[in-house]
Image (tube, rainbow, N blue to C red):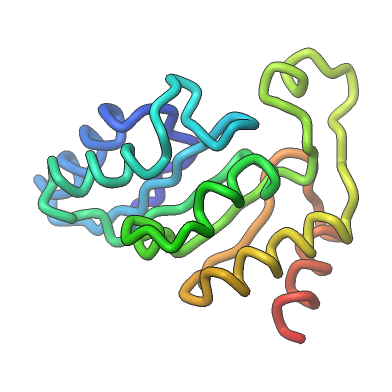
Length: 153
């Protein structure tokens, strides 16, 4: 299986899914979003997922969100819209900073361990089909351990 992370637009994700279709390898596509829950291009996350599925006959095994703090997208994904059921995994940033702020930071912000874990718990409470978890910018063993503790309670 191929896991393609940190996609910023649906067109590049469509290309990756088509390439995997061509060689008959399953693929997971993970989008990143800005602090408003939209992709860096301004494309809404739901539109991107629907566009990939429409262009590839739903060939992606599932979708993920990575490289964004839960606060950046939770309002977008807990809506109950049908496309949200295609999201199965999260690799969130520990930092609440925007991508631009992270790019300019002299030191990587490691955020708040408990806040991050609580963000995962809230998302799983609203989206119980989520089953792949990890960390991205600013996260380390402390964050992943607390996420695991929070999700197994």
